[in-house]
Amino acid sequence: MNTLKRALYFILSALLIVSQDLIASPENTPYQVYIVPQLSPLVTYQAWTPILEKLAEKTGLKFELIVPPNIPDFEKDVNNGLPDLAFMNPYHMTIAKHRQGYIPLVRDSANLLEGNIVVQKDNPIKSINELKNQTIAFPAPNAFAATLLIRSLLAKQNIPITPLYANTHSNVYRTVALGDVLAGGGIKNTFTREPLDIQQQLRVLYTTPRYAPHPLAAHPRIPIKIRQEISAAFIKLANDSTNKKIFVSIQMTKPIEANYQKDYKVIEKLKFETTLTREKK
Image (cartoon, rainbow, N blue to C red; front, side, top):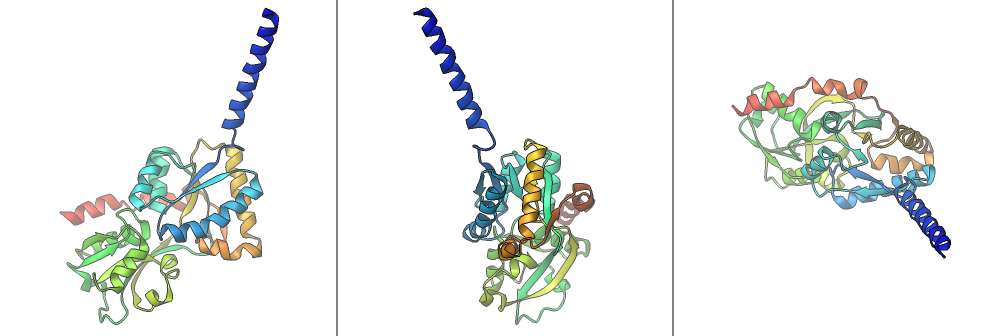
């Protein structure tokens, strides 16, 4: 009887260990993919869901799409290392690299990232010098091209402004179109995704220098083999012409492998904190 009990105990223990391994295995645990909320959550989910579904089919992995309600919440989650994978702006990439060790996997090669200052189409303003002492709308304090690049350039040219943070790029464009502020910061990729009636009410007053665009980055806890599989599958899917439209929708028309030293290290030298601190004094 004791022998039978011992046998049953070992069998149950073995089954428990196997079940725990299955639960913890990459194949059964979805990788959480966070997307920086430049646009509305609905638009973001519609853009990224087809990509992740195809990526899951290609790799055999599972993915859970998460879109935080605003950019500051996204930043907090990345700084705490919550995302397994995250689509983030270049400035976020530099912070995530140093705080959590995030590794850029892929980025777009077709379009570099540039910031735009937009104003109402019929507004007679011709120069950024006319923005002095005006309230300007921005998506969030740490939006790279839409906020940091623009504010830094204005500060260096001694053009003081008062920032108004609208949470998303879409909100910025609408705030300017309604005439609530004189101008707003955005980027080409989000502006061209706005409804035509919004675009037709605005014009671009100023464009910043260009930098490597948003990467899809991975937390270092993701094994290198998995990171390589995701990168390879992502690029292969994009090279299939039948997927062209869905890759355009996520601002990654022609993805290539990303490299931190080559693509994003240069952003550390911009020293936004020093410039903007000096602006406030």
